[in-house]
Image (cartoon, rainbow, N blue to C red):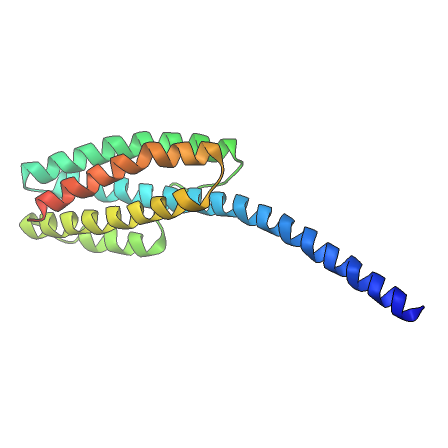
Length: 169
């Protein structure tokens, strides 16, 4: 009798763990979407703030043109991202992560062609990281609205990365 109760308890525990795991996986999927939206918002904010600095500090007209384009397109992206986050009840900030804030501060201390060189290098690196973030999320997130946002944004990020790479040569 005790053995039967123990076996029943084990089966009950196994079922609880099985269903709990499925619930945990579902929570992880929504957590993955929320985490992606938060990271995407931070990266987007960094592109805007860095490029705003370049709008006033860059000396090369091509670098200024890139900065203008990035501010315009990332600002539009910011609005789409905020709307999606609000729809999903995910709090996203309007500020870059701490590491990028430090990099932006260092960049703002530079002048002339050195500023241009470091800004373009930063845009190459940041856009490569953003593309990687979006590509990883594309394969991991099932939420249709977030996937639509990823599918619409990823080609633009790739264009930005290529435009920055061309200026770095």
